[in-house]
Image 1 (cartoon, rainbow, N blue to C red):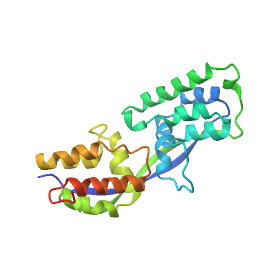
Image 2: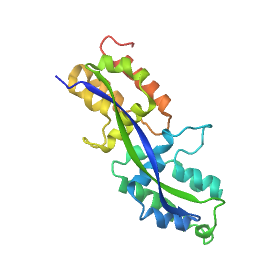
Image 3: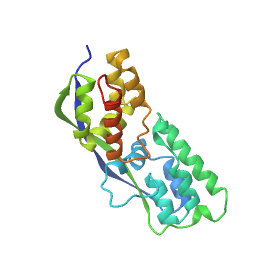
Image 4: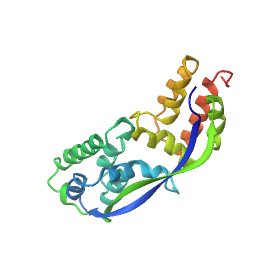
Length: 219
């Protein structure tokens, strides 16, 4: 019998590093030395920050390149990076640097063009809270998901991928412990891409998948 699912909440605390960039060359150089928690924050932190519009670009790097340097081609290249496909943040760092270097090589002027605003590198620290909610079955978990805070969705579906078993969200891992009756549910959860969406949309998609693939569920 699997242990009850312990629902937790979290917040990402933003911590200034003192590092910044004005140009693409500076951005590339800083990316080589900043902590990996910076990479994590600038890709994933936006999901937990309040938003007052729907930005075209998902990550902070692409947003800065577009607004600060008016370099739409590079912003589009950077926005296509899906961090959920990289289990190792070092690999994600390397991908970013490769894209920057490709763009820098396209023009002698690009590396030194100054942005109209600095890019400030921020690192993250995750603070976790125990909600004291415990759920015994996948059905109860599915019923609870619509009521989860966005911090809980982030912690269990996104942040979980940095914890053992590496690259796997908590919902998939826990449901898999209930045997073949829930194998399709576990598979469908694992197929959800958490990045090109909002946490509200992600919670709604999880709710739909649980309803459709639990025995006696809604489809």
